[in-house]
Amino acid sequence: MGGNNQSRPQSRSQSTVSLQSVTQHQGFPYDLGEKIGEGNFGTVHKGKHQQTKEIVAIKKLKKVNPREAETLKKANHKNIVRLIEFHEVSEITFIVLEFCEHGSLDVYLEKIKPTTEVRKQFIKDMCAGLAYLHRIPIIHRDLKPANILVSRDGVAKIADFGQAKLVVGPDSEVNVDKIYMGTAGGTLAYMAPEVMQRHYNLQADIFSLGLLFCATLSDELKRKIGAQCTAMMVSKGDHSLTLSNLGDDFMEKLITNMLKEDYHERPKARVVYRQIMQHDGPVKQPNLSSVELVAAGIEACTGVEVLLPGEAAKLPGHPNVRKITIHDFFHFTNPAMSFNEKRETDVVDENLIDIFVKSQGGSTGVFGISSDATVSDLRKLISLNSHLPGDYLELFHRACRIEDETPIRQEGIKHGSVVHAHSVGSSQVLYEMDESLLDPGYNYNFTKLNDGNTQYFRGDHTYQRPCGWYRHALKVKGQYEDDIWLGEQRSRTDSSPNEWPVSYHGSKMRNNCIVHGSIATNEPIQGVFTTPSLDIVADKFAETFYFEGHTYQIALQNRVNPDKKNGNMVVIPGEGSEESVEYWLSSKGYLENGFSDVRPYGIIVRLVDDD
Image (cartoon, rainbow, N blue to C red):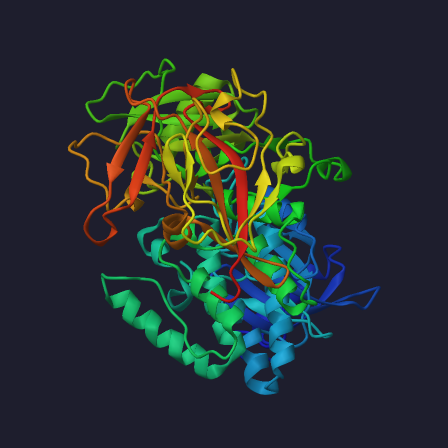
């Protein structure tokens, strides 16, 4: 805790003297000094250890849950205010904290007027601290300049966890900490829009962090974005905030993405931190053949941390490692799928919907649940049927962790949605690229090619080659009943007998994105959407990500079963100005390892720095 807090420093007041009388004869090893802060959960005093003479901050609490205190005590990071110890004295709880001499960030910025470089370092510090908290995982819920403290050596540290919440584990239903200062319900000026409806997850912190970046960079930017926030709060329209003319294109794009209204579209804390660190590091030459680039692209699409093959073995203490396969692109990004499995449910409801659940080990199942259910109801249903402990069950939808108190409808879960269930215990789930994922012998560099008027055909459909992209081949030969669907492996413009046509898929390619299609049905659309038009995928659906100083796009190159007799591929013609564009819907034949009627065989990446 710091020396400049919400209340003015006081000399030895009556309250301080009374506290001294409580602690002096109870073996309390600290001397209490002046009061330096006060909030809803207690008061903070400057203190000194009687033997070591270490200066600390001592908080007197009205109430504390020891288990929660122990949890925060484990949060050991240089950018988190350190919890040293806690004592129970005459039924009063005292928490001993690291003392930050320069006080809160807002006071420091106002008094010191630091350079741009110092401000950027504060941003790095805050990113590192939040990325660490989200790994635990803990939601802070009240990030603002007053809750960032600056140490004697100029390091920014996240403090005041009065509104923080554990996401996973026992007692995750209650607020964590009552240890640090905090306001009753977060701070309106730095609150994500979904929190206003009591609907939040880790990504609510990202919105607040984006506003915190603005406040740190300049007073002018703080005022400008503050005015937008005020307008946003009173408006029922778009809640996304935008920046312009910041003078730093990278920070402008990053903060704008952090302030997206839809929390699914905000980057994760670890991604923000990595991008910040890479941006200020040496710019490397683009290397489209890099496996590290592919891993970063998959991570951007799926929203989970992706390690390189064999990398997990170098990280002891992480038993929960899942091999990620290319079909996870569809599982994470496509909200509607076709089910053949028997549904397991005890729920009878006219609003019953089917939800596809994939476990950490790769097993799958279909569960029926009311569309009016909460995430807590879904968690109990999965726990009951899968024999996984509910207290340590993490649920993800569209790559975001979902929370118990929210209705599944509010999380965007509907008929055919895909939910990932992880039983994590006390450690983090890590994803690692499968060694059998890539087949580099079939990689192809299209970056310098331009087909002009030359027409290519695959499966008797026009084939738009991925000119300007680099293709990382997937290991698909021998993975299905035959390899005829791939066609002959030679340079050609024509089709081979019985081969399948080529299509493309972007991770943003969901049912609600297909705005040009015309389907004469009100039933939910099930399956995977692809299109033979790479231009459309690049323009609307390909994931854009930042890696080692450059911006890239990533998409999938697929083969699609053209057999329309059995309903394998539904062709949806485009409308209006995009009349020539088709979307292909492949819904039949779901297999344990993916869709048999849409088969990815390449990951394509391209550099878009100059776009």
